Length: 476
Image (cartoon, rainbow, N blue to C red):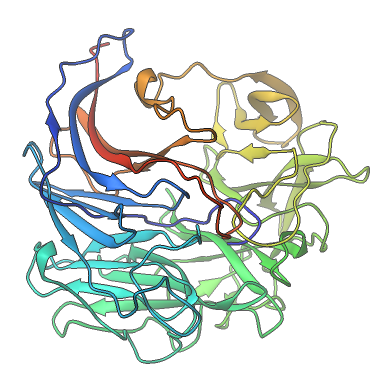
């Protein structure tokens, strides 16, 4: 995605054979704070630019997908608790990073090119990544659960696989593996959804038509599909007219029970593909240069499981404000819920920095106390806090301090250990599930930030460690 926060669906990574092991005694910490229970160094990685890796734990198996210090795509495997990983370097059809014409497993400077993994119902491992408007790069294992047997599959369906971006694995209501990706480019692309048949080991389109189609004049940046507490899949997206971030416009919504048949918020059936002109899909008709950017939209739910869309845009004075929308009485009711001063500036293309001295982030809105809704925010002028909203009227009730939640990571891991200027900590949450219900696994590495997908002049930082941590919370 260009000019905005990453649209990352399911990200995953890979691993190898001489990872150092440190059982690390539980780190003393405050009551309820996370503690390090296990540390395993997976490999060393190239640290000159940020790109997403993937961690996938499935019972007694754990996989990591990543780019190693030679900038080659690799997958690492171990049984949880084992002292090291076994590394498999994936073959490449090119000795250079991918282009518009060539598939490759060599890492370049493009921070769109994250990697993602999934296991199907029969245990075969699937991996996709290193794509930004380039040919499909997809691998599948020949044997169940065996990362060493990953081989490149050059085509899923044989159609519309020459310009792929944003791969994402998800599950259908029946538990079948599905694959969502964009075909085309920023400002001119379609969202394609495939489904996998385990018996024949083959892919097909879930529907004959794309899910979202830009018709050569736009592309959609979706948040979701998200399975809600009401049993529906909810999809919230913005359209973009060109590769420039400021040309995002028209926040839109649709829902589905099965990912095949879609309808608008009023329950009216939608014909696929969904386009800008599909009836009843626009939540807020925000114009180009209206202050919305892909990635800022979030889906939430109130106590009655009503869908809440939150996002930001410019108000009538040109200041960036937070908004909430809910479909009530046959229409989308939109309310401004902040009163900030200052314009969040973003323009142009390429992966970040998306801002020019400004930053603004909204989390998912949640039910709070006493009939209120709570929307956490981070603002470059106002810091962190919570916007409080009346659940029934959507009337803004002011702000509250940021909640004092237990930290997600041990404090000593949140600071970059490298002294190279500009280094920051990256995390990948486990896309699977730890076999120990009292602990969870996370993937940590340090890099320089994104650089609008352009080469960064040397010197670069030394290759850093990619580490899997097992995190345990102390007793309450």
